[in-house]
Image (cartoon, rainbow, N blue to C red):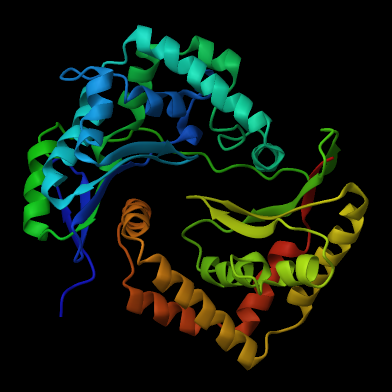
Length: 406
């Protein structure tokens, strides 16, 4: 029986993970354990700026050559930054896999960050900031997280500000990358119809020859912050509201019961409790969801909804009633069985998206130094009890904070 995935390690400490699938398409990514929480106070916005700057030219290519290398072949090259990681990823035909790996290595290790290109990219990011300002729901999540982790490395947004961007130049980017983008904090992840031996040879050829580097700093866990219940006047057509609070980190054993709980409450299915209560039964809210975001040493949950201004209190009362029910009433055996089956089916279906699997596997190996097989995930989900879910609801939703844009 063919294994679900294979792992390996390059000579300089970069870890690799590969899944072989029958497809003419390959996906690959370099996942780097460095994000905005690794910025110094003088560096806010720099992790995201550096990600943009990767595409602005290397020692071997001009900016347009970086952008056209895979696109001319029908492939794609992209990148993104989160609070804790930066990912450069590519999608190509199987026959162009080597070209994709070579290009990722070139921009990750040989970018030159020309000042003329950086000046143009600052304007692009400023436009991105302005776009977020025009999206109340996006701003709401950023502001909520800033307040929830105020005073910590997690308590500032990914994009930075116009003022902070003006201070960053190529030397600042180089210093940040030298300090945070070390080979012991990297994973190369791939999915495609290639043998692990072939993938490892290519990865070794283009990523394994750089000198090993080691991280010399440690992230600081965020201190507790006061409860808040805040309304901000934004003069929007609707009210946008988040109810939530701190939650478990990515290593916590309670993470899985909480994931099941969040899926019951406001997952992607139309039969989530929030969707039924707010939309189907009462016609109050078109947009509503619950999310759980775990970080390496903390996490948070957030319940989001938008509605007409005069329905805000009614929606909050309905949500409070649902939370009370989850905190005080244990799921029946039938409800628990359906919850687990839905969760596992959603996971299995998501794995059909090879790009998503590739990115998730890389992140998992980076954080946990291992990745569970689907069978192991099934076993862990099957072991979760209804009482564990109720206890998690009691612990997480007893004292929540609220932020409203109105």
